Image 1 (spheres, rainbow, N blue to C red):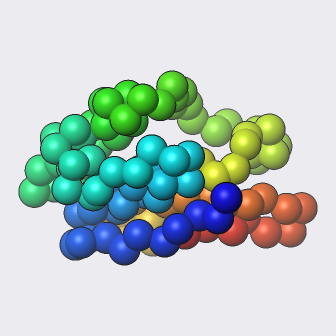
Image 2: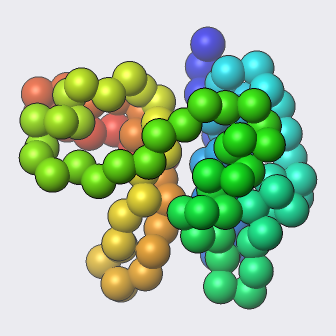
Length: 107
């Protein structure tokens, strides 16, 4: 199944947009608006706890953890959602689509 791109409604919707794409990938389609409700997204966006609540509401079993070593990335099944700090110092959610020896492909 192909990962369908779902655009964020605004700058605070990166988490819900990522979860909507993952949901679609696994056949559990849900809108960004519904995910925002599940995640209790506010004016500041969605936090990790909110993402966890939304994922569980959609029927996903999930695990949140911090990657300590780069090699750990190669053990994960793609696609998955990653929480990062972007170049501007802001929290951001992305999807890791594929990992090779040379590149990490993101959405």
